Length: 317
Image 1 (cartoon, rainbow, N blue to C red):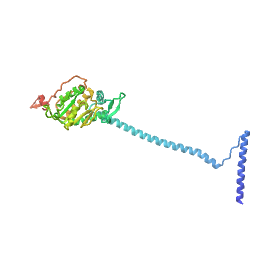
Image 2 (cartoon, rainbow, N blue to C red; image 1 turned 120 degrees about the horizontal axis):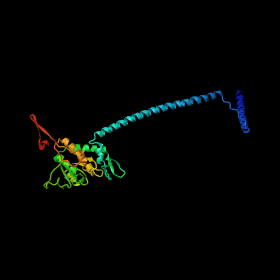
Image 3 (cartoon, one colour; image 1 turned 30 degrees about the horizontal axis):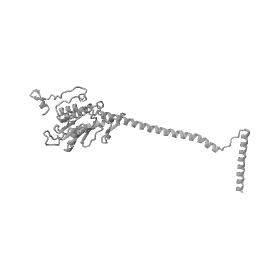
Image 4 (cartoon, one colour; image 1 turned 180 degrees about the horizontal axis):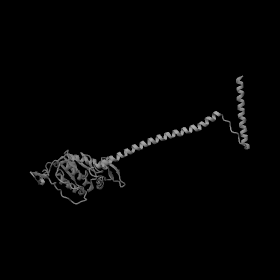
């Protein structure tokens, strides 16, 4: 009986809803504003609460998330600033510890390579200019110069030969030999002088400093034949095969060659304790006229008196 009554109620309610819909449509057609639908109190409350609490909750969550993001960004920016400052400081220290100021390297054009880059030199190239010239990394130039200097300093003057057929390097090479006592060959290297014992001017050496692998190839080949060491100045178009150590740099320009041999001479004199003055950098780069090599004034004491030693004594000969 109860089930029958419930079914009757459902039919009645469905009929009422159908009638209401029909009435609404008729009212709309004849222009009468339809009555607002009745909404239960519970649904009304839920909707109202949802409009308030859901919106507030969303804003609060967004705000919290935003604040957390800002905090993280601040930390990131802060750490980046510290890293940047540290990096700048490290760069400054590195530049201060260079053999000569970076500006002097730049002025001399030592970093300028050629349009050709060999596989051996590719790893030392920083970039190419718009005109196609390859550019050496100046930090690597300084690093390789230090290595070359340290290597050269381990050989006595009588065991070293320096060769430079290129005219732009003659001035610096001759001065280098004059200062250090190292045997130098400019213009032409006498073929076989290191390999043919029958030659009257034959001599043995332990190290050959090659200014350019291409034009000084005879000296390089002779040195390798007798299994001696090679310190080679390499431009971007050079191959370093056969070199025990290399120095990076422009080996075409007189200023660049000058700066390389200035540093080699300066540090060699210091390391070997030679009593001789090395001309200033400006001389080697051609900014001032020729200057004779002067022995340092060395004193020896006799009782209460001091006298200047002879040049031979001063040089420790």
